[in-house]
Length: 125
Image (cartoon, rainbow, N blue to C red; front, top):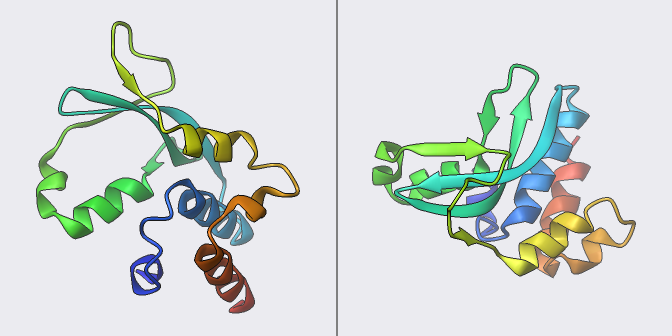
């Protein structure tokens, strides 16, 4: 909800990483997972959060369903292994962000509005 309120729902992978950060800070046993998502026959590289019971928290899906309720009727298939014979869509910028997520300069690549939003969220606690 805060992402939409602060117009950060289009911040892509940064929002997923922030949610993971916040859940870890609350003591939840979660991990970031990179893999592939297939929806309506289309496959793309994707990042989501998994808890200890392997439940998937997909922020992109949640935000898409908020914009269009029809997304909730789609069959979402998550896999870590690359699907055989699938044409995969890659977002090069998100992949670069993913590769640098543990780098101390990671947030320098984030949009200014997002870094401000992240700072506000962390100051609240």
